[in-house]
Image (cartoon, rainbow, N blue to C red; front, side, top):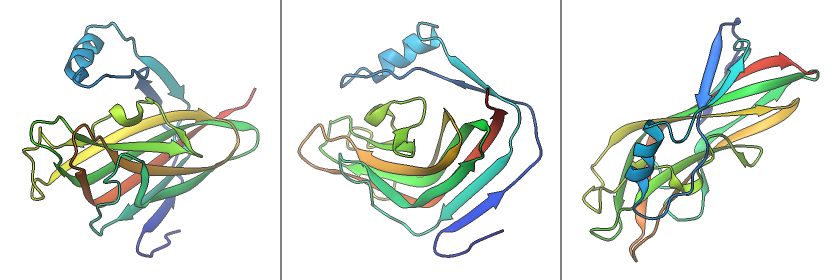
Length: 202
């Protein structure tokens, strides 16, 4: 079934396939520590968390084309059209896997300030893993060097294991603000895909 409006929601049920997902623990970063932590993570200081499922049982997709600057503030705001609902039936738990991609530009802010634009994915208001808050840079101003014509394609993926119930999965946008000038988070051609892998509850 396909429901078409300004935002299109496409629910799909597919056959089972093998599936393993690896995630990492959340780490709070101070201003300027991003490269240092990334290097230590690659050296094995922060071991990955492995999450497994028994196959993909449902896929729900939302896509939305119009350009938007929603999310251009330090407070999270829902990105246009990037909301889906998915239901885990009674007697099961589910591994939810959410992917978000978009064309984006992150520009403005003060020259020399390491500002970035963040996207975060939440299920029923709870951030999916890895839970990094505003630390995750979906795009960046490149110390103020980017412009409103610095278009790029970016993507992210998050996971969360949940019990039976109906879940609203939503993408939020926000920016850092280290200086005095507010950066702009521009997005277009947004796509949110949520998959569920069911496991019988014990």
